[in-house]
Length: 229
Image 1 (cartoon, rainbow, N blue to C red):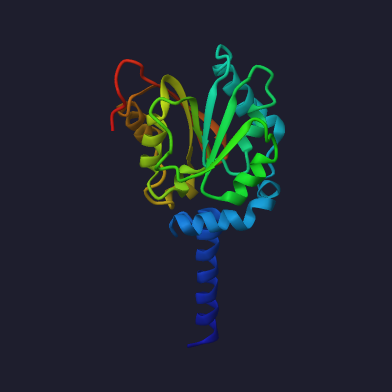
Image 2: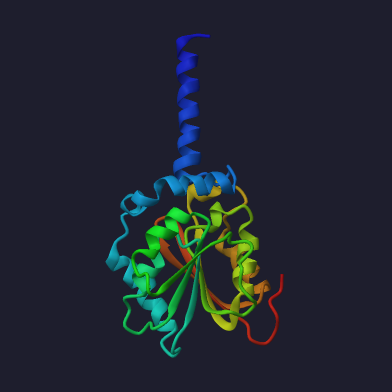
């Protein structure tokens, strides 16, 4: 085999590894591989992401707090909470007086998040597709930048809806753009995802352009009937 062919094969392998490990964050390698990657990067994860506090407040913290302004002590579940991105932007909001349950399979990620507000975050190490809570437990359930890395994203959505109070808010993100198309079976077009969520018992499904490669989806659980699966 010539040097040129060897070089091309090495480049191809490097490109595939970069795609799967960096862009797709191990989405096709299984849950254990994804969790292990997050375990390794937990301490430097936030510095890698470089979240903008102003953007976080404007798009997550403030609008989410406003949906709960009439609730005395709202119960929020953050599925795949990671290092506490949601908690960091929601808990400082003066109108939010509730508690956040942060759920993730990576203990090192949970530990980083817990350190930010230890008195207002309850951390639970658990998978997102088998939530350890009763039906209709939380006023708000969120799952951000995570569905595409789950073995069965729709099962995670079903579980999020199950534990959500009737009338409660579900806040999801859906990856979009050219990268999303290669994360096979784990992302959706808006025209596809909207009807799917409505069929599962959600209403007022609203898509909001969020980041370069994500949409935010805001939706409420119907009060009149049980969630459909």
